[in-house]
Length: 126
Length: 178
Image 1 (cartoon, rainbow over the protein chains, first blue to last red):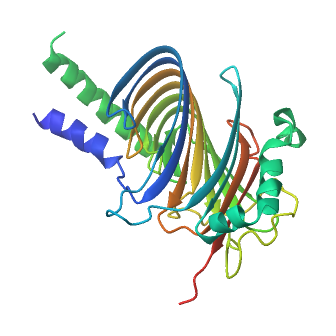
Image 2: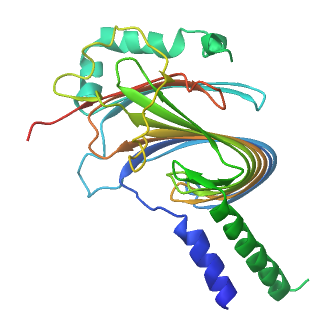
């Protein structure tokens, strides 16, 4: 019993719980994967290739605004070892400003989508 | 093999593992054997910083993506820079060109909360944190972006997982005057 308690404490000591965040998540795996799937409320077991994306939004009281956000995401995947992410997230007044000023949104879209993915990090020898 | 035997074996190996790791090295919240390779980055405008941690072997991460790993793991944590907070509109200089983060001496990021992280793992990965709990054997790649509740600003990132340079990243956060 002591051993089990030790292992549980070791495992839980690595755990940090904080739900006061808006979280965007992107997972890819090749092999054997067993993990909790909070978006599905269950456990996920995969053998082979799997890819998932999800978001966790802070839960607030009824009627209150969780978070105003404008987000742009681009994921470029070629195999399992060539994964590139491009994100732009604007929240609060910045998100409202993007909605009111389409030219700003256009600039942001260009930054996220126009640069060919293959050029990202090319200058750094990748 | 009974559950009791299995539990005993895991217990013994955990003790050996913990002892070995204590004799290893800890840097940026990562305890590993052999020691991890840690690189710090910052962009020119000081609006974004990153820490790249590469480990081969056994490691325990106590940062936001806490867990235990065996094999080759590259984790990159992204932080706001010293000039990320300002009064005004975070979209004010949206036209300015994007710049990559560069090697820097920034090392006072321990304890700061990252806004995002990416992980590229080849081997065994055991995660135990609020947003990822489970086991992976093989190749795994994932990322998380965390925006604190009430965050008012802009986060931009363009990165390739596992790359030697974390890519382009910045945060502009409006600081509300008190």
